[in-house]
Amino acid sequence: MNDPLHEEQESSEAVFDGRLLKVFRDGVRLPDGSAGVREYVKHPGAVVVIPVCEDGLLIFERQFRYPLGRAFLELPAGKIDAGEDILACARRELQEETGYEGEHWRHLGVMHPCIGYSDERIEIFLATGLTHVGHALDEGEFLEIVHMSLVAARAAVFDGRITDAKTITALFWAERELAVG
Image (cartoon, rainbow, N blue to C red; front, side):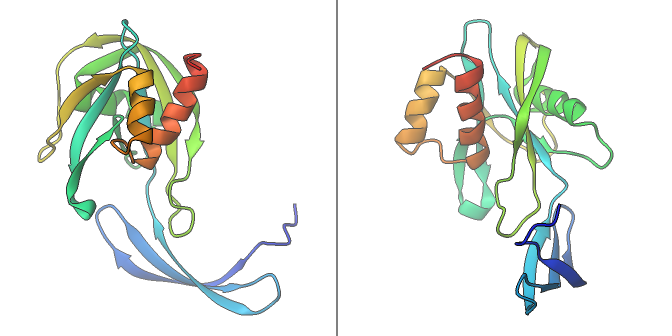
Protein backbone atom coordinates (compact mmCIF):
# COMPACT_ATOMS: atom_id res chain seq x y z
CA MET A 1 0.00 0.00 0.00
CA ASN A 2 1.32 3.41 -0.95
CA ASP A 3 0.28 5.88 1.78
CA PRO A 4 0.42 9.52 0.61
CA LEU A 5 1.22 10.56 4.21
CA HIS A 6 4.23 8.23 4.59
CA GLU A 7 7.51 9.75 5.78
CA GLU A 8 10.64 7.96 4.56
CA GLN A 9 13.56 7.55 6.99
CA GLU A 10 16.81 8.86 5.51
CA SER A 11 19.06 8.79 8.58
CA SER A 12 18.92 7.70 12.20
CA GLU A 13 20.99 8.71 15.21
CA ALA A 14 20.82 7.14 18.69
CA VAL A 15 20.64 10.08 21.12
CA PHE A 16 20.22 8.14 24.38
CA ASP A 17 20.47 4.42 25.24
CA GLY A 18 18.97 3.75 28.67
CA ARG A 19 17.92 0.64 30.58
CA LEU A 20 14.30 0.99 29.50
CA LEU A 21 14.14 3.67 26.82
CA LYS A 22 16.15 4.50 23.75
CA VAL A 23 15.85 7.94 22.12
CA PHE A 24 16.46 8.50 18.39
CA ARG A 25 16.65 11.49 16.06
CA ASP A 26 15.85 10.61 12.46
CA GLY A 27 16.07 12.62 9.28
CA VAL A 28 12.99 11.98 7.14
CA ARG A 29 11.70 12.84 3.70
CA LEU A 30 8.21 14.35 4.07
CA PRO A 31 5.32 13.63 1.68
CA ASP A 32 5.96 16.90 -0.24
CA GLY A 33 9.63 15.96 -0.72
CA SER A 34 11.04 18.35 1.89
CA ALA A 35 13.29 17.23 4.75
CA GLY A 36 12.20 16.91 8.36
CA VAL A 37 13.47 15.69 11.71
CA ARG A 38 11.66 13.22 13.98
CA GLU A 39 12.74 12.57 17.59
CA TYR A 40 11.17 9.57 19.27
CA VAL A 41 11.47 7.01 22.02
CA LYS A 42 11.80 3.29 21.32
CA HIS A 43 10.07 1.22 24.02
CA PRO A 44 10.06 -2.59 24.39
CA GLY A 45 6.26 -2.70 24.73
CA ALA A 46 4.05 -3.56 27.67
CA VAL A 47 0.89 -5.32 28.74
CA VAL A 48 -2.10 -4.24 30.81
CA VAL A 49 -4.40 -6.75 32.50
CA ILE A 50 -8.06 -6.40 33.40
CA PRO A 51 -8.33 -8.87 36.31
CA VAL A 52 -11.97 -9.76 37.06
CA CYS A 53 -12.71 -11.39 40.42
CA GLU A 54 -15.51 -13.93 40.89
CA ASP A 55 -17.68 -11.22 42.50
CA GLY A 56 -17.19 -8.98 39.44
CA LEU A 57 -14.79 -6.55 41.07
CA LEU A 58 -11.68 -5.52 39.16
CA ILE A 59 -8.22 -5.46 40.71
CA PHE A 60 -6.36 -2.17 40.51
CA GLU A 61 -3.12 -0.99 42.02
CA ARG A 62 -2.07 2.34 43.42
CA GLN A 63 1.54 3.05 42.57
CA PHE A 64 3.82 6.09 42.78
CA ARG A 65 4.95 7.31 39.36
CA TYR A 66 8.12 9.37 39.65
CA PRO A 67 7.85 11.51 36.49
CA LEU A 68 4.60 13.05 37.75
CA GLY A 69 5.49 12.94 41.45
CA ARG A 70 2.37 11.17 42.70
CA ALA A 71 0.58 7.86 43.04
CA PHE A 72 -1.81 6.71 40.32
CA LEU A 73 -4.70 4.25 40.35
CA GLU A 74 -4.16 1.86 37.46
CA LEU A 75 -4.70 -1.67 36.25
CA PRO A 76 -1.79 -4.13 36.63
CA ALA A 77 0.72 -3.68 33.83
CA GLY A 78 4.35 -4.09 32.97
CA LYS A 79 7.12 -4.14 30.39
CA ILE A 80 7.55 -7.02 27.97
CA ASP A 81 11.00 -8.54 28.42
CA ALA A 82 13.14 -9.19 25.32
CA GLY A 83 11.81 -12.27 23.52
CA GLU A 84 8.94 -12.70 25.99
CA ASP A 85 5.55 -13.87 24.76
CA ILE A 86 2.89 -11.23 25.49
CA LEU A 87 0.57 -13.66 27.30
CA ALA A 88 3.47 -14.93 29.43
CA CYS A 89 4.24 -11.31 30.31
CA ALA A 90 0.61 -10.62 31.26
CA ARG A 91 0.50 -13.73 33.47
CA ARG A 92 3.80 -12.76 35.11
CA GLU A 93 2.82 -9.16 35.77
CA LEU A 94 -0.57 -10.09 37.24
CA GLN A 95 1.00 -12.53 39.69
CA GLU A 96 3.98 -10.35 40.58
CA GLU A 97 1.95 -7.21 41.21
CA THR A 98 -1.38 -8.47 42.58
CA GLY A 99 -0.64 -11.98 43.84
CA TYR A 100 -3.30 -13.48 41.55
CA GLU A 101 -3.15 -16.03 38.76
CA GLY A 102 -5.82 -16.21 36.09
CA GLU A 103 -7.30 -19.41 34.72
CA HIS A 104 -8.90 -17.85 31.63
CA TRP A 105 -7.15 -15.27 29.48
CA ARG A 106 -8.24 -13.33 26.43
CA HIS A 107 -6.23 -10.87 24.36
CA LEU A 108 -8.51 -7.92 23.59
CA GLY A 109 -6.39 -5.56 21.56
CA VAL A 110 -3.53 -3.11 21.55
CA MET A 111 -3.15 0.57 22.30
CA HIS A 112 -0.42 3.07 21.43
CA PRO A 113 -0.27 5.59 24.29
CA CYS A 114 2.18 8.18 22.94
CA ILE A 115 2.01 8.12 19.12
CA GLY A 116 3.60 11.54 18.73
CA TYR A 117 6.92 10.60 20.29
CA SER A 118 7.10 6.86 21.04
CA ASP A 119 6.67 3.47 19.37
CA GLU A 120 5.33 1.96 22.63
CA ARG A 121 2.49 -0.50 22.32
CA ILE A 122 0.46 -1.92 25.19
CA GLU A 123 -1.27 -5.28 24.72
CA ILE A 124 -4.61 -5.51 26.57
CA PHE A 125 -5.68 -8.73 28.31
CA LEU A 126 -8.75 -9.86 30.26
CA ALA A 127 -8.10 -12.39 33.05
CA THR A 128 -10.83 -14.35 34.85
CA GLY A 129 -10.94 -17.41 37.10
CA LEU A 130 -8.56 -15.69 39.53
CA THR A 131 -6.82 -17.49 42.37
CA HIS A 132 -4.73 -15.68 44.99
CA VAL A 133 -1.25 -17.24 45.19
CA GLY A 134 0.78 -14.41 46.75
CA HIS A 135 2.82 -11.43 45.56
CA ALA A 136 6.21 -11.51 43.92
CA LEU A 137 6.94 -7.80 43.60
CA ASP A 138 10.10 -6.70 41.84
CA GLU A 139 12.82 -5.23 44.04
CA GLY A 140 12.06 -1.56 44.61
CA GLU A 141 8.40 -1.96 43.60
CA PHE A 142 5.80 -0.72 46.08
CA LEU A 143 2.08 -0.64 45.50
CA GLU A 144 -1.34 -0.98 47.12
CA ILE A 145 -4.08 -3.28 45.81
CA VAL A 146 -7.56 -1.80 45.32
CA HIS A 147 -10.74 -3.65 44.31
CA MET A 148 -13.38 -1.67 42.41
CA SER A 149 -16.48 -2.38 40.38
CA LEU A 150 -16.43 -1.41 36.73
CA VAL A 151 -19.09 1.22 37.47
CA ALA A 152 -16.94 2.72 40.26
CA ALA A 153 -13.89 2.66 38.00
CA ARG A 154 -15.80 4.48 35.28
CA ALA A 155 -16.84 7.11 37.82
CA ALA A 156 -13.18 7.41 38.90
CA VAL A 157 -12.22 8.21 35.30
CA PHE A 158 -14.79 10.97 35.06
CA ASP A 159 -14.00 12.50 38.47
CA GLY A 160 -10.25 12.48 37.79
CA ARG A 161 -9.10 9.73 40.18
CA ILE A 162 -8.07 7.56 37.20
CA THR A 163 -6.10 9.47 34.55
CA ASP A 164 -3.73 6.74 33.32
CA ALA A 165 -4.26 6.25 29.56
CA LYS A 166 -3.70 2.48 29.49
CA THR A 167 -6.21 1.99 32.31
CA ILE A 168 -8.82 4.20 30.67
CA THR A 169 -8.41 2.37 27.36
CA ALA A 170 -8.59 -1.04 29.04
CA LEU A 171 -11.74 0.01 30.92
CA PHE A 172 -13.30 0.94 27.59
CA TRP A 173 -12.63 -2.64 26.46
CA ALA A 174 -13.88 -4.00 29.82
CA GLU A 175 -17.23 -2.25 29.37
CA ARG A 176 -17.75 -4.10 26.09
CA GLU A 177 -16.41 -7.46 27.30
CA LEU A 178 -18.28 -7.43 30.61
CA ALA A 179 -21.51 -6.03 29.06
CA VAL A 180 -21.85 -3.16 31.49
CA GLY A 181 -23.72 -0.26 29.91
